[in-house]
Length: 384
Image (cartoon, rainbow, N blue to C red; front, side, top):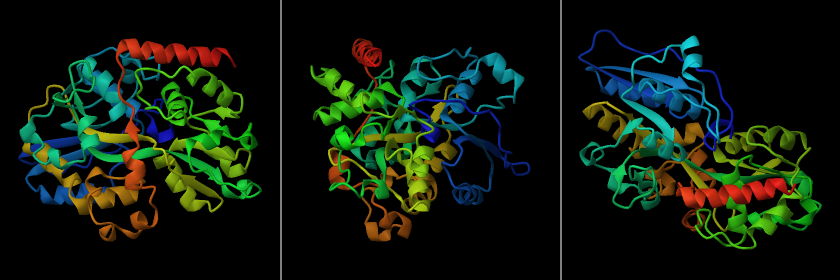
């Protein structure tokens, strides 16, 4: 959704930012980044601390681009996917060359299942992430997977989380002044006053998750409530449009009054537009996390460990959070008075503990449960 990307819409070009490399160094180390996810000051500080390393980085505008690079590095022909469109190998070869394989790359947690099953990654060894166990439990759990990419309590560690955010409700405060309420939870989307005045993400997992949260169920429920379809049909009859990347402009123009989208898109916008407000639903929301992954075939490197631990230092993590409209898992047990003012003044960066405790990541589903979700979505869209 726009930058979030991972519930997985659209495609941007594979333009590559210039590599920042030094002169002859003893050891080369490179990163493949999601553009905007790491401030330049964080990269430059690490570069200064690794004087014996030829440190470079390349940025891509979308996670789809990074996923495609991972496939090309493994010689995999890139196919059209049901949920997202990524370039074919021929298309990539017509554009910029993929370049040497990076030591570490950014992916979103939602992409891990595909990356694991396509054998694009190697897991981290425990000694590569000595501070991993200090992360909050949900961030540890979402990257522990089996060989099929499904969550596994004793699974291997396939990613090192360094940024996270959430699904928010954004609304026009001036348009809702005529009513005696402001939105506080997902159930407000069902209010009759909002008919044809709000947008939903164009993604089946998120729409079903909203319906499940409204009914008090988990967004990863394996047993779908019998009243989920009629609940979603009622919502669909009132929605103005579905969009994952064009829902913000109608809000700015006042054509729509409310939308649902990712925090990294919404937080910068509400900072610039006083007419817009946002809330994290009280019953909990959907979380996402960007993680560092190890492309398949890369040897263990102490510099990889040093980079990840650099991102996990509280001061560095606060810098990443404040400059990239995202939270950091290592900040969740830190005193808030030590945060930069930008983080202290806006609770939507890290969410309250009560909302966070009621929030979940979208977990990978078994093929059988995935089919149930798809069938319900098809029934919903077929009833429109």
